[in-house]
Image (cartoon, rainbow, N blue to C red; front, top):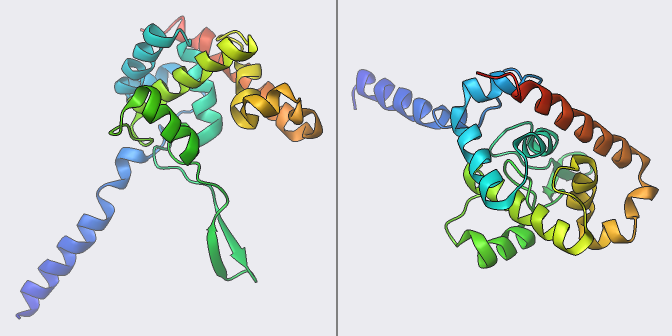
Length: 194
């Protein structure tokens, strides 16, 4: 094989490896809801569809996605390491925009999403959140627009929330308060987007 052909094949392989990651990259201005939806208008379409179907406000969806994945479509939890060098798998099965766990995602697929639903698809991820939050409202009475309480139930699971497991985790209560504050910030910003 000639040098030119080898170099061309190598260049094509390198280009193929790096080409797909852009679709999962975070938007540039995560503190500006209007900038996020200007950069990624399909996010707003997905969230509006979820709001119509499930009643979960767009600003609540955005705040939870920001906390869970920073809008990175293929986000995963970090690896665990033995002796600092041997990879032992990920900390959990959480994946995608919504950081849904395997078991909960499979429950959603069986109930609402269908087998083709993917956690790294913004439409499927927001629909999952709508389904989960609506079930939380039905079972626990948490309003759909209460981002802070919905986040606690999302993070701890409904049983954990009912048992108030979050009270033993001051860091989580603080994170949930930040989710609530971000939700209000996004709500205010979205009211003035063009």
